[in-house]
Image 1 (cartoon, rainbow, N blue to C red):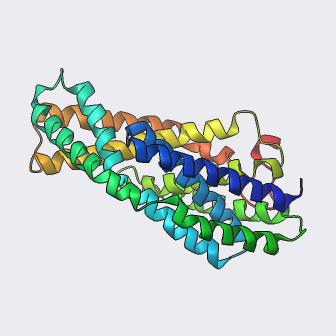
Image 2 (image 1 turned 30 degrees about the horizontal axis):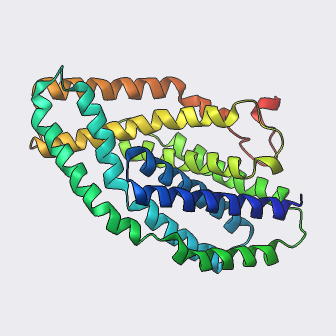
Length: 279
């Protein structure tokens, strides 16, 4: 299959999967359904970013804007459900969390009640004309060019951002780790979307990047939980609660810092450099 046709096929496949997941989420906004919807949004957004690097088309820009709105619509629900699970697991050992646990339960119920209205506003059928327009623009823009060199260049650019953010991380500043996570996530989805057009990647390469992302994601979840606890308890959680979750957070940071330099194996540092797995 021609390079352009392969990317268009990936685009259509991801869009179809996204519309199915949105439909399922409209039926039940469970934690799993919301999680899968957010994943499909991110995969589409990463592919769109790659496509925009190849051809900056107006329809793609508009579609990206709508998908980012979809992704952001469930941030609070997702965070609440993740915190609720963590707190529920800790409740027996920390009975001081009972009132906070109830608070999270009520917040989740409130957000779930709101979700049908939000989901109806995210009707993928309304975006279908925009998706079709983007598809036609891409079909015309890509023509019969060989896209692999341009894709490699786009991934090189994305990885440079990853390395810049990695070198700027400060464990005491959660924002630096969050920004790194976003850039690594974008890199992983770009690699997955264009994998068939790239030089062969090592076995389990994408899985290794995902494991790296999971570590960063757990740190982000911990930061959100610590901030929420401070707000709920008026900046002074009970000592046992504060000690326990601060300790958990430090363990996550230590684990990440032990594995942090694995990021240097994810891609080549420059277009003229060899891939690290070929050295």
